[in-house]
Length: 128
Image (cartoon, rainbow, N blue to C red):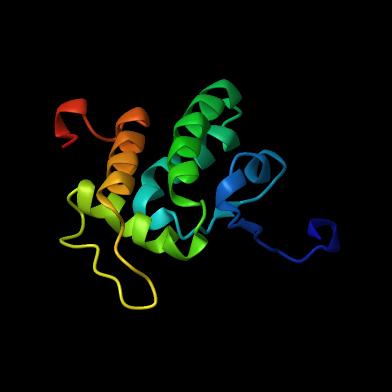
């Protein structure tokens, strides 16, 4: 497409596989998960564009921890999981949902908290 001589931008929104797209030439990331981790996604893009693939791979590992916690079955709850992450990061007051979506269980909230700790976004002491 770029060989056609017209300026274009290639955006990736494949949240479960963000590193390969910029590595083969995507210009930007446009991902719903960016509502939670836009800073990490921007850092990933900068690292890839700078050719710092080892650092990009390390960061991608952190991102994948969060992606696995959010993008899993039942998929209808992925947005609720993102809202819960935002609440845990003090960026949103509540993770209110409307039917047919239901609130998450305490067990799943605990799993989401642990993913934030494992990815380095929350201190272990912040996990209730």
